[in-house]
Length: 330
Ligand code: 13P
Ligand code: SF4
Image (cartoon, rainbow, N blue to C red; front, side):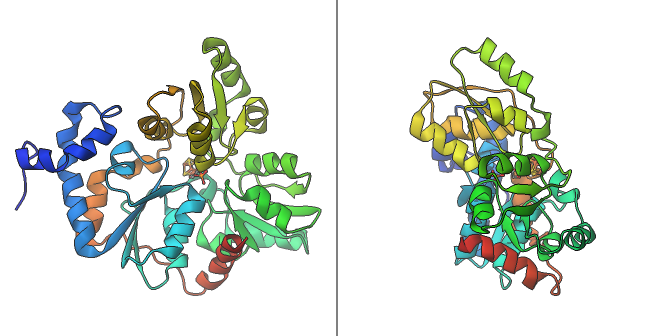
């Protein structure tokens, strides 16, 4: 039986959830979310499903239906641990593939198959093979923001949260790091390791400039600038701190800056602001159109219809899994 959005029962059942997000979701919008949230919570129980949501998901997903939230590294780690029968990945396709690689026996669903990533799109398995031929013996580190076929050609994966550690763990003077040119340049600067890069960029982070930071500092005295390492190196150079989305969240939680700007995707500030009402968030941000393909209604449909199931070519899965597992072991 369907429940109308104005049902008093529905409003009562979801009241404590609304309380969590009321600072970022106007009350007039809540009834439109409440029905899907209620249905998703029921479907999760019926299907024995968990929802893993990336930090860039909107607050009604992040705070109201997700079981686990985090950066790419945390989502991979948690995917490897879950006992649930089914995983719904509220994020982009490479994250769902990573979850599937770590859970070959489980059903992994992504609510919209078109949720891609400009970095994952920027490189093919054939490109990686050519690089290996060109630089024999040089280890290949692939960012998790790649397809499984690309991971399968690499030696080890990394995320923005562990890239420095992974590169240093290899103990070599030179590595190939694909496909994010800016992340690779930022890590080369941090580690002193020579890094051969690929000209892939995140379409969200490449739009930030050092001039933006300068203007933000001029317009908002005392603002603390946190940048994601997918930003160009000149942005990272003038930021106060650079780190993965989880590292940015930890920075705000631990240091409680009175005023902060997160040079990253828009939903991050909303999600973090909910937990830190005393911190003022300055919000120039760039939307990720891929992350924004995921919505409550699509998550609900995904659980109702068991779509879209993520599958990985059995010839590709073992070497791709090895690259991810090597990363997780470090
Ligand atoms: P992290 O959350 O791992 O820092 O990655 C950011 C990102 O762009 C994911 O798409
Ligand atoms: Fe890809 Fe950038 Fe979107 Fe992350 S934010 S999914 S790296 S395009």
